[in-house]
Image (cartoon, rainbow, N blue to C red; front, top):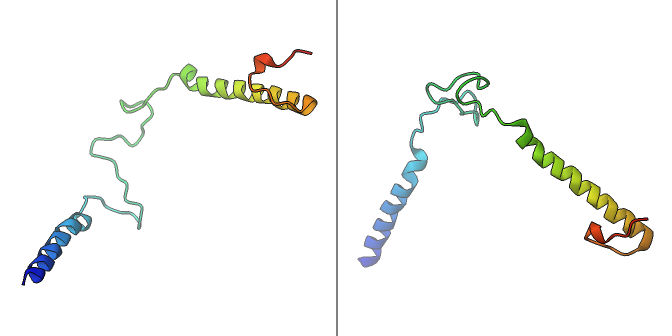
Length: 97
């Protein structure tokens, strides 16, 4: 009797756990898997609206500048390794020639 009650309780708990997956989420899908739609009031064109992030070009340029510096240091390390066979991590320690 206790096993049947436990099984029934587990079944009811499982049904409640699966219920949110079956709930309607309010989207209208144009095609299967293409269900994104903007919230009401969101503009069709983001550029120029209050949702436009307007990133500073200098801030966006920081990462590309650091990558260029990293590639230059790696080129110095590889050139020194090909010449001497010794790997030097710190480019300041590579002797100038």
